[in-house]
Length: 319
Image (cartoon, rainbow, N blue to C red; front, side, top):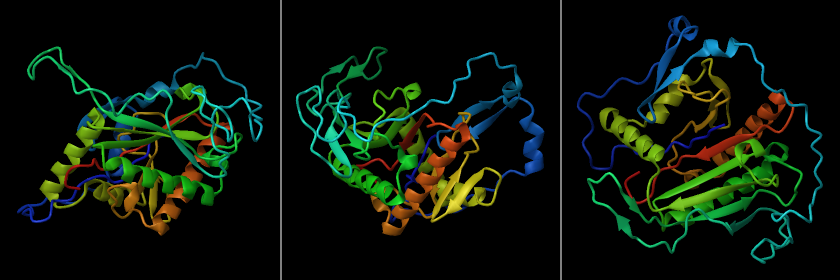
């Protein structure tokens, strides 16, 4: 699962509007698209500017792989051996507070550190280049309960997680260019602990995909005077790829999906970052997340492993 918040900048205040703006996007005709769907073709990802190969016929090939039985997943509400549970001692010797809602702490094995040097290797035109990058990584425990996931949490509890994401984004954005909120759920996606949690990484440089998305959306805004993802959401509404359209949020399978069960969440009205969402839209996001997580779990009759990430507007520039 993938998730986006509209991060596209509008044409900056004071900038001239395009003299010949492009027409709004129109969803492809179902008949025309059907002519392509049974044969290999490629689809344009308007966010990154890349093309995605689609070979739908490969899903019909004989499956000789393993089929996993339904897991008897019964975890205790509190696991004294879990280093994320309330009151537990982590490997560093620090003890978690006996938290009763959400809990945030700096990752004990952070992939980014604020004290990294700015040492550079190589020249601007060289083949071998490297440089230090500063940042920080935080862990967000969604719930004190060890035995739940977002799909099993009520909307009020998910709303508290959304508020934490927004607050952390604002705080970290004061110091870092990019703030990435994400969750990897399940051992298949590399999650080392089943306790419901996600992470927030913040760094002083833009990842490749984020930089491509930012450039594409700026180009669209300059050419049309509109936000790319607002245009995209308007074109998709009411179409066959829409999963849910409620509470100010659109859940859909993106036209350029690269994963078998990929989904995108978009606010119907623009928001550059999670902190831009008012109370009503944060509540709507909690409802949309609850619905999508429950759908995934129901699809496979087990907790569905996924990677979910929020792509927000970068900091330190016009938005």
